[in-house]
Length: 568
Ligand SMILES: Cc1cc2nc3c(=O)[nH]c(=O)nc-3n(C[C@H](O)[C@H](O)[C@H](O)COP(=O)(O)OP(=O)(O)OC[C@H]3O[C@@H](n4cnc5c(N)ncnc54)[C@H](O)[C@@H]3O)c2cc1C
Image (cartoon, rainbow, N blue to C red; front, side, top):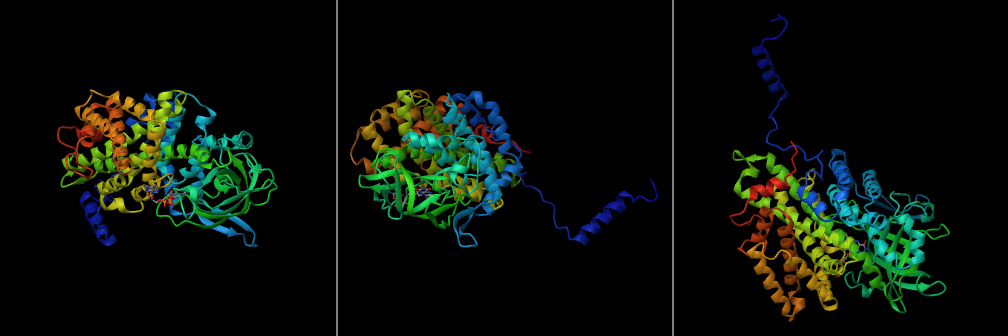
């Protein structure tokens, strides 16, 4: 040994001494690696199977690439930055000109750019084909796991197309720019932009669910009627993404509530008098700005028939409700992925959490809920791809309010339970769980809150009774595969025969339609351990109320293994 080199003994003594000197207190152990740099598509077997099953197998190479992009540490960081830096509203510039400008963190714009370049607002309209909605839903599902709030204007832009098409000359003027796969954040007249975003303004102070109570008035500038120019005077109590280039707005004419397309700027390049009063101070969804607005003679063009504003805008609302389902299913997937990943690495009382029976029951239950939500959502996506088929049209009509109600409503408790799996660190803001939790009630409340979805379900039953037949026909495909399912189906069909006090019973009926369909889809398509566990825990009652109530005789390990993203 070289005389100048310390002996191992001397080296150990000096390390010990320097540890004391530096007051090194401990080594960090028993913590998971960050769940990042993983492929959100390849690490999600349920998603891959759903994509193939529902008709978008042609899209897999692109989904694989996009899944890898969504999982990078850089992408995940964008979501954190966009939320840590809330949007800021400026009513005027420093010279006193009204500007109605909302400034966002660059991360928000990067996420928007990615969403629009990927066609999350356009692909089923620009390239309709079998599986187009399924492919878009899969991409949206992955992208909104990174950051959900900015998806609001993406959805509204996407969903506006069916409503705007009701006024062909307006569609001709706007559609090319709405469907362009690029994002232009500049606060400029739309005529100067190659791509635009669209928002919606329905809710007023006196009524959100009941928009018939809207007091905003529309006055014809010249000739009245569809496609004509009006000036709007009134207010809107919730307008999300106020930097959108144009909005679909509801306002009253002499013939009743009508729908209008209102740009932020007038054709002469002056600012339309659509004035943001302030931004909402939201508990969640903070990366997305939502505002209160006053309309002081804002120029707008009537879309669709006068007095038929609700049927016109409902085309948009139907699509936004579908996206609420995708978004909430995505929230549950990300929450489950975080919980499963954490427990795969974390030990307590000498054993990995994911191997301990009580935690296995909770984790498997969370994974089941997430997979069931995805299976339902992707089945609706296929129905949207096949609206020329009567069964699919009827199915989408009923399955949308049922699924919007159920999946969005299941999300908050799911997020909380996943947070608890992570323990105290799950409550901390440098973990994604607080964001998922705060985001979780939003989809349930906007675009028609829970009761409104139930009332819409009853409306379908009354106006389109064949939709219930289509729903049961679809569910019955799974008959004979599981005794719990067969009993549940028969009981539910029986209960629908009773038409007494339907409004009072609506939540119960809609809950059961949702779990029936989820059970049917899993029985037909998922591995037996998933389907059987779902039916045993959701289609019969064992007295338990919380997650972690899976009965004995199922295989939680297999469910956990299927759902866990493997990142070491
Ligand atoms: C973050 C956020 C962003 C939003 N962005 C927009 C936007 O961009 N544009 C827009 O137009 N709106 C927007 N909204 C508004 C949203 O759509 C409304 O809040 C929602 O429709 C409910 O309306 P409301 O708040 O007036 O509640 P209300 O209509 O008063 O409803 C209150 C409760 O009563 C229930 N209810 C209503 N009617 C019945 C009935 N007949 N029977 C039983 N129960 C009933 C509802 O389900 C709800 O639970 C946003 C809301 C939020 C939270």
